[in-house]
Length: 337
Ligand code: A2P
Image 1 (tube, rainbow, N blue to C red):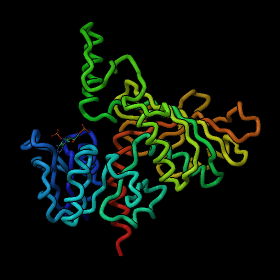
Image 2 (spheres, helix red, strand yellow):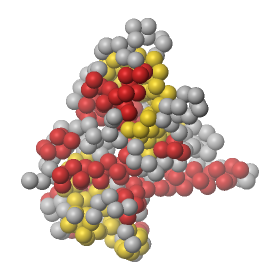
Image 3 (cartoon, rainbow, N blue to C red):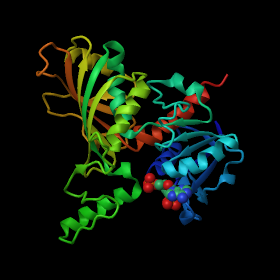
Image 4 (cartoon, rainbow, N blue to C red):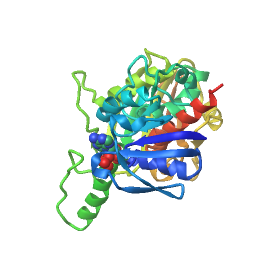
């Protein structure tokens, strides 16, 4: 039983997903505090059959809080997480604010649970594309070291928050009704379109999202030299990310070996029905806790048998954010003496 949980950003897409996970009964919470901006004060949210009123996030609002799940962006995390820690709470932060801080563990419970032990009040949840990539790659890497990853993402609107999901819905309706489409949240039309991830491009030609995938994978895997070449693309899907992944291993490996390893991997489900041509789809991954993996095949461009191609879909709001945060709390509870 969690004595007192606060959700910062409770009105947002990830915050509401945390509420849904509590309602499903995965974790039991004695006292729940829902926080957001001043705009949402008074909003009521139903959680586990009880109605809670949203309050404004302030530095003084964390008294007595045991765990605080932050899903309100990096600026708010930098502003309020230190106050939450000072008040005695353990912060599980979904933003990028502290992820690359050497003192902050970056945790996917199926992969590096022991890192959570050395936290100093804050544990970061990795970027959603990094988590969904890490889930099938880690169990393979443990058996046969992965030397190089080439990944292309097909990222859902949910990664940009509730307003972006709403923009996809309204733009789709506007487009079908022949009305003018005006992008507000995204820089380009999202309905019936796709575009390079809407983050700044660095001098090396990679955008911020692609940098996160590289650096966070290296940190989660404790492999600072793991070679990763990502291309991150936003697609008109509501809430599940897809990724096309090409792996080069240290030693030769067959698709059958990969299937065997992944069929036993926690948090991963094989969807690889070649005869029915049925493979992972974001619509099937939506609302699911597992990452779906399929299209497992030898990379025929690598004649030494060290290359594998696969396709993964994972719910961005669940394993990509809210579920991973809840799992970190479960992990910390299980580590208590
Ligand atoms: P609000 O709904 O009051 O704006 P999303 O990722 O779906 O866009 O959600 C972002 C979350 O962060 C929302 O719950 C939002 O609350 C919250 N938020 C935004 N600005 C602030 C702020 N200044 N202080 C606290 N929470 C904020």
